[in-house]
Length: 422
Figure 1 (cartoon, rainbow, N blue to C red):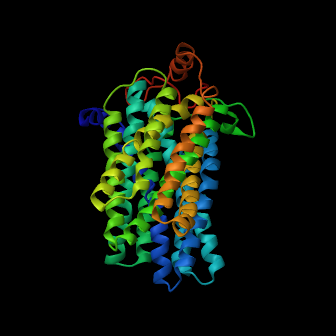
Figure 2 (tube, rainbow, N blue to C red):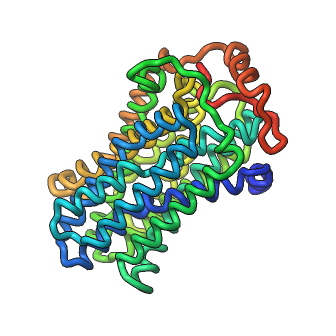
Figure 3 (tube, one colour):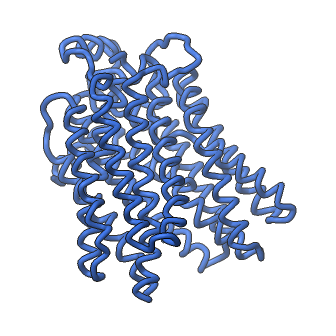
């Protein structure tokens, strides 16, 4: 298992690209907690802090696919680094002006969210040209999903450490400065500078003209809904047991399950098309959410949370492959960014729905939102199996083999082009 990931990271440029992307995404991973802590330190209410974080999230959801399309059209360095700088400047304005007047604070976080660089989609677009072999790319997607779990765990801890050492404003500034450095590390690399999207057909819908991609986005909207609802349900469960640390235990168990699942998934090679495999994984993911409605004792609930997380990273890793197969030629970064956006919007919806569910039906009702989200994600895939069908492997392989035949990065002959026509 570890040997497979070590082999990937030993490939020239791979470790730098993964590390740079994770560091560059720290501002996005930590924005909600950093904004809330800053708002409270400035004397603002929880309501204002939540509203500012929500504006950041909405702006981020709008900006990701737009910037992803810009990357496909103009390349990574011309978009990723300027966007990272503008996003950091938005947070700098927030730190300098505070929360009064609120309209300026809202504008600052909106700019920061809108210009968050699409590093996540950009990295997945780079993997084929860096690793070449399709099995290695699939394993890299799994490694990417595992690394995200680590980042979203370590990021908030880093923010709280910086706040305790200095202040919430300093935490915002340091995190965003680190983010710019991460983006710089990525775009200064040879693969990022050399990468070019495949020629694309001019179309105002861009990546969204792919029925298969739309089907996938519909499914992962509900996966996001399930995950978002669990964050609220976990708080309610902790309150029921009168222990504030219970929430942290459940979230840690969920993350540990995803980590184990991602490592196991990436440790083996998978034969056949990924679409049927994704259907099975999402079915198992949905099945893992159902027992959470039982809300047993703390130890049993932690075990159930770990089981519920096992298939999350594999589902994401497999979805990345499906996105690449269904993205119209020349739209791969935009397509990956749409998946990030849809998942994030679904998570926000799940958070919003789980709150009233707790008040109306108690903690089991809030976990029921997660269960319903998982089932709906599965039903979408079942209902759209026909549009998720892709051309025969041989036909796809023709597009794959010819895309980078004259391009060598780090001595590796790329096996296929990101954004090929499926």
